[in-house]
Image (cartoon, rainbow, N blue to C red):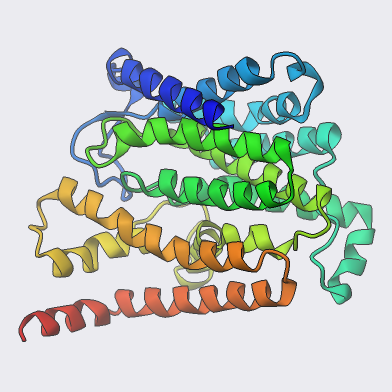
Length: 361
């Protein structure tokens, strides 16, 4: 397992290095247009392609005897539509949200047909009866997997943010799969962590290459599929364990939908600069480190560690209580409350004023 991680890491590191110089044409680089752009230089956004290739090559290299007969091949096959849609968007920047969402649905349907990745319940009897209705279970699965895939893209705003959050998620899934001796899920987690780690070295702190939509969708889709497989293959795992593991990016997505549709009355897919990580960047980091507001790179790199910490507040209890549904439910709701309170206080400039006041004494 360690060998697969190191191999994927080395391969991803090398491919990202090549892509930084190979994809230097302006059509492959991120621009400064849009409210969510906080980087300094035009940057290649094809790091996801390096991760995808690293995962495929690593899977074949370590599982070549049974590659075409195992879930690994089926997972990678089902990830093609959503990944390709994201990669095309990274290049042409004209793939609509509806098309990408449709590609996500196709990927989930393929996954259901090949891997039977259907959510069959949430371990709460009053709701589990609904999952006995196949149509409901399929629709819920399609929405859940697509949502998780999109959530990684939502938090992909600053150097190292989505990559470390994803590594933490795979680490949690890998730990539980190790406890249950689920070799397949564990192996995939190791390969994914290695491939993302190779990208992270180039992305943080200087942002030499970006993950892009293709990489974010690919990582999020693999997270969702492995989560369902882990629960379905091991009765001891509570279905609330993977939810708590991904609660930070997932709740960020849900809250963003509420904020845009209900509060601001704009389109759900309309980009803005009011995600939690963006508020941290603009209203908290300058007060903590007294960074010049014009020093975008330093502020960018200083933002991510605080979100890593916030994510770990969910990851740690998930690892500790992965078998205990009602404890996990408690921590899911606790995290959501914590997120809302934190967001509200930052949005109202309360935390900034407190930090400014403390620095005067």
